Length: 110
Length: 113
Image 1 (cartoon, rainbow over the protein chains, first blue to last red):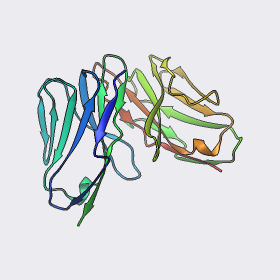
Image 2: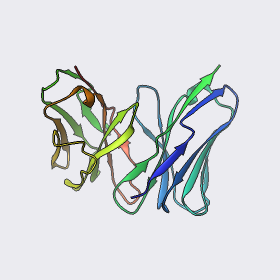
Image 3: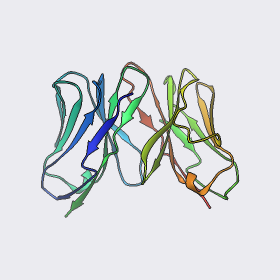
Image 4: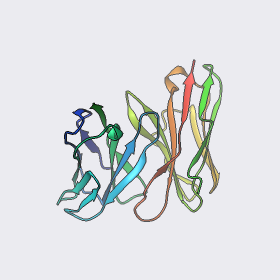
C-alpha cells in the first residue's frame, strides 16, 4: 500500500507568522485528507482534496493537492495560538483505508 | 449524532491482566478502524473491518491482541495478557462512503503497570 511521508515533524512558529507542512506519497492517491489533533484530543477531519491541482481554503488555512496526486501541502497564515496541535495528512488509495503521515506538531510562541 | 463512542476513557491495569476496549461507531458507517498512538510510533493502524468483517489485521502487534465486531454497532479490542509496552492511546474510527472520511472517537488511554 501507499506510504505517506510528512515534514517537518515539528514546527515552532512565532504568533503571526506563516508556515507550511508538506505531505508526500510513494504512489498516486485517490484523495488526500487533513486532520488536526489538539493536545490531549483526537484527530478531527479538516478537509478532503480529490482533484489534481485542487486548492481549498478554510479561513487562514490553504490546502493544495499536487498535479500528480502524490503530494499535498497545508499553509497557515498569521498563526494564532488556536492553531496549536498536530496536523496529519492521510492519503487514500483505492481500498478501505487511509495511510496517515507521522504528523506535524505545531507550537506557537506568543 | 453522538459520534464514535469509546469506553473506557482511561484504563490502568497491572501487567498480565486482560484489557477490553470498546467502540460504538457512528450509525450507518460500514468501516471501523482501531489505531494505537504513541509518541515513538505515532498513529498505527491495528485492524480494520468493513461490514463487520475483518479486512486487514496485519497491524496487530502479536497474538495477545484480538478484535471483534459482532454487529454493526459494536467492536472490541482485547489485549491478553497486557504488558507495559502496550501503554498507549487507542483510537477507534469509523467511516462510510466512497471517500472514507474518518470520525475518530475520543480514545482510551491505557496504562499498564
